[in-house]
Amino acid sequence: MARYTDASCRLCRREGEKLFLKGERCYTNKCSISRRPYSPGQHGQQKKKLSEYGIQLREKQKARRFYGVLEGQFNKYFEMAASKKGITGENLLQILETRLDNVICRLGLATSRPEARQLVSHAHFTVNNRKVNIPSYLLKVGDVIAVKETSRNSPKTKAVSEITGSKVIPKWLEFDADNLTGKVVALPSREDIDLPLKEHLIVELYSK
Image (cartoon, rainbow, N blue to C red; front, side, top):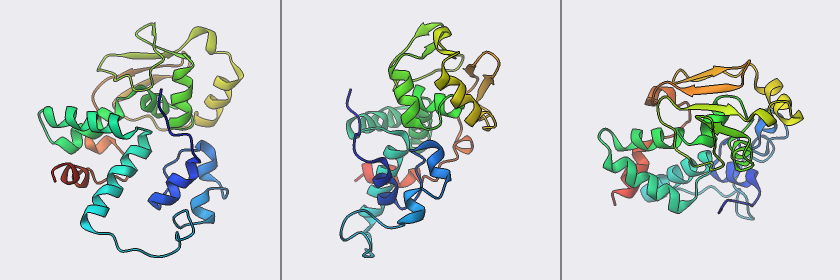
């Protein structure tokens, strides 16, 4: 399974804002954006004026990095979004939001999307009572996500629950904290997605 293995904080610095890839660390003064608010590399502190294409490209890269998606998979998602009825940019974000690893993070069962991806890969969750270990699994309305029975009392699960216990759950999801289960009650609308993304720039990039 292909994935990004370099330093996560470099991605935040490259995009010039927090992508929340390191969980709780992103909320402390250890965050790399707070300490070095410029791009990585020896020329990172030089200010560059981006072209129209450059602005659109950076927006696509930022979306990819928020959700932890590689280039080929992102292209596939865009094709899916373009073939659906509705606004292509909003369709794209809706598809990205319904990935299993993202929903695990939204439910507060992981402190970040990379951590959610790892937990899913290690088969700690079920969907509709069936084990699923594919982070990119796309959920549908009515799907029920649960922490696997054998994983509920693990130190890791308890630690994550303590950290994320006060997390606000999006209205398109339901969460039962006592049983560590969640449910997709609706597809997310654009208003439900709180990430600072300008999806129309991504659509313009692919339209070239």
